[in-house]
Length: 515
Image (tube, rainbow, N blue to C red; front, side, top):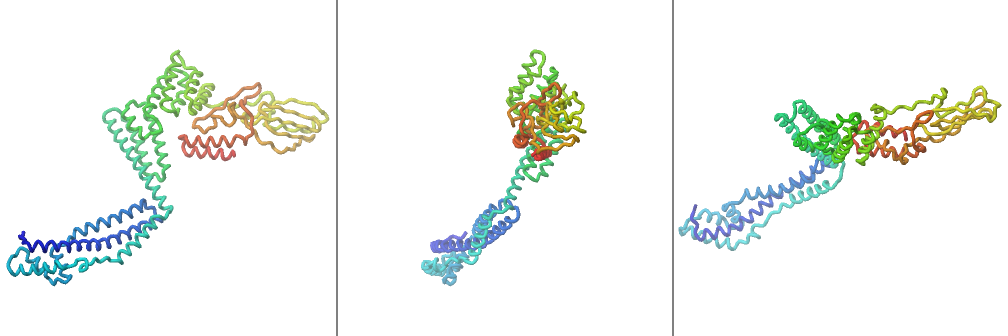
């Protein structure tokens, strides 16, 4: 390194100011280029985002602008001017190669070199760098960058369906990626449990097949509700496959894939229910319905405790089972209670028996009484004949009155159909304007029948046996007064249940046809 004298240090100090101005000028130059390019790219990206789903296009635009500032700084410092370049810049301000010559004479102390340096110092001290070396601002470049930046901001603020679609797609990808990661971790855990013997080969294969199918379905999901359906199907399968599982670590790890069910509590409930069913004839018949009971883990635990208490005297009666389910105070348990009661009443068949027609009169009708044919009752005014009619148990109560040529024939049924018919001696009838059909609602408050709440279990109506036929007990109301309320409750129940979408469509189509 050259040993610098006092003149060399003074020249170096004065040239440092020139180097700073050179550095600022370089930054202005780089920024004018990088900023214009970044603003153009940000504008183009957000313009395309109006028509095409590009997630976070605005954020990417700001990233580009920030990157332009960073790159301009890096470029500037990478091109830090040397002292010779600063001397040449100073000479361009009118020093006529004095600075360049003096920089080359650094370290030389001969008389001629000292005279040269003294002359350079006199001119450098008189140099006004701000006036002699003004900054060049490249106004055209900055104007272009400003216009592109304004266009970028406008495009960023314009709402469009493509931007909403981009958000939806990104959210779907995040949702799928999260579930894929959980399923992958579950697969690895199942493989570990198979190796250490916790799971049998059959159990492990079933779980791995279920998880593999779930991953495949997740990768094919097109909408968020598709992912929810996959999660629902996976949860239902895991609940069944892990019903008798005792490994708590496995159940806790797989719990993330079945957020709607406490797998550990359900497994304990299923095992306990199996033990109790082996000891009780009633529970054995009701076991299938109890296994599918969709209530919380705390309520399942309470139910098993009630059943154990009831079994302590040797057998669980149907009444005790009904009371245990009723103590849960849960709508799902209420439906299960009614279904089980119907099954036990019919020998466990689970199907309601159909109402049989009255045997008192082989010539029965449904809500209508035929007029007198061939005028057999003509001229017998005031004579009455009693006849029994039968109607389906779901029909509304009513009376059918027939009059023929001055004679009246009255037919009263246990579940009587609505209608008023008049006959002639020729046996012909003419009908009046039909009265709105009525229905019989079960003995609960009108419109609150728990059997019509859209549960995934079948609800069986209670029946009362009369002397001549079988019909539902309850209140008679007009059809239109309850169908709307029942359909609304059914739709609400469907949305909260785990019924497949195809079955939901069938139920909705059924109620739509009723309305």
